[in-house]
Image (cartoon, rainbow, N blue to C red; front, side, top):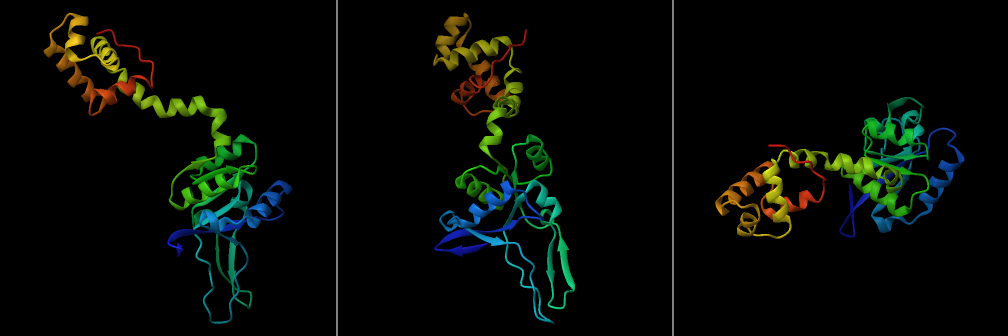
Amino acid sequence: MNTVWGGLVVTVELLEGNAPPPQQRRCFAWLRALDLERFDIRMHAANTVTTEPGEEPAIPDIDVRIASAAALHETTVHCVTAHGSECEQRTPAERKPAVVVCSAMQHEAGAALADGIAGIVQFDDSPWTFAAAIHAACARMLFISPSILTPHRNQVTDAVTSATHERVTELTRREHEVLRYAAQGCSNSDIAAELFIATSTVTSHMLRILRKLNVKNRTEAAKLTHQVDPTPHQQ
């Protein structure tokens, strides 16, 4: 990765594939025309690299490759000598993190996600979304376009909160009662008075609650109760 003006600049290679559809051509045309240096991104068009006899191929120092869902699997990048002999031919996915540009068809995004692609965007996403996806891919972090995720908000919520839900439902009925009062800001003595139990018993319940929920204090425990709708165990 190159360093310019004290920041990290990501070098991106565009892989258009053979006979790209009009939507992809338009998208990549404006992507090449953008001043992506302001996002610390440098674009590089994927072309055949030629060298003089006896020289090593001058392969650009690429950080991320970006392609359509079809082109990523179709395209192979060739490095050839001036005499036409091939010295390298590998698929993009085998070499560098990739950002896949998908159409509106959901199966393309799903297939890219299943393949372990780092960044998944759509053709009509904004330059800021493309820039975020590129930087995330360079850092080996998953980025999925908001336009892809938004229709699946409920499924994403379920995936994120499922582990929390399991922890909360491990609490006994009494522990749920203690936690409910704690979430309302009641002290241990207040809870004891409401439930007609000893303050020391409330303290013991709180310690078990913190351990089961794997949190440090009652404030963190209370936050978890707002993320799920627990059904207390009959214990």
